[in-house]
Image (tube, rainbow, N blue to C red; front, side, top):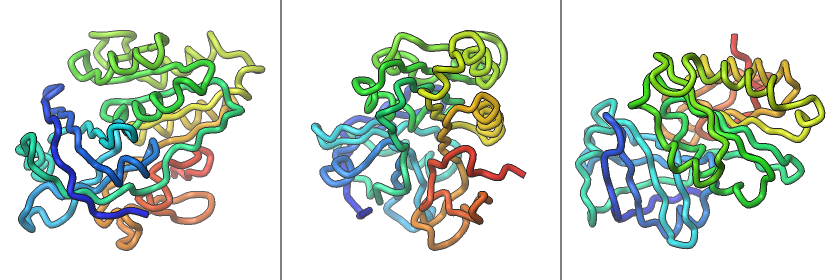
Length: 264
């Protein structure tokens, strides 16, 4: 059950051109959250902006009673969030949504993040690193300076593949391209039944990965990105079309089975 919790800022630093890492003390949310869920953050003490901002749970530490957010300052709300200092309090509503489903029978995890889509995937990688036999991480970005979390993912696996649009780091091209190459080169038909793809990123990327997963007959879970207002399914502002009718990304997701989504 989500609650509003006043979370103290323990650390807040810039980690990219417009990217920030925020660590919050949180006895309740941290102990109830699962990878793939998110929080709705109040970015200001005033009513401007009126709406909270949904941010993925980047890291969850139940032992330390903290959670971590990785976000990009792209608008008024997130710009205001960058002004919070260590010791100040931030109002968070959470944990919200449905997270990733971990099947212990699946012994191969293929984690695919595009741009800021890596944000919820680190918590997943850390949660499964001692439970899954093989973890592969594929990261895509526009350029080398926008590749996020590479060193953090290396602590969960040494099997990382990278792609950049301009070829400045890793392979030139899209992360969906290196996923297809990876599956063709390293994953046989027998192993396909033991694997799950977990992905988050821009919608065109998720669509491409979903099509690849369907083609290769591999289970695939995707974390959808949509504009959200309430975060609890009341406003109906983040509806997406699925095989079972319209569903709310904030309440029924953000994680969905890829085969459930209707892209057209």
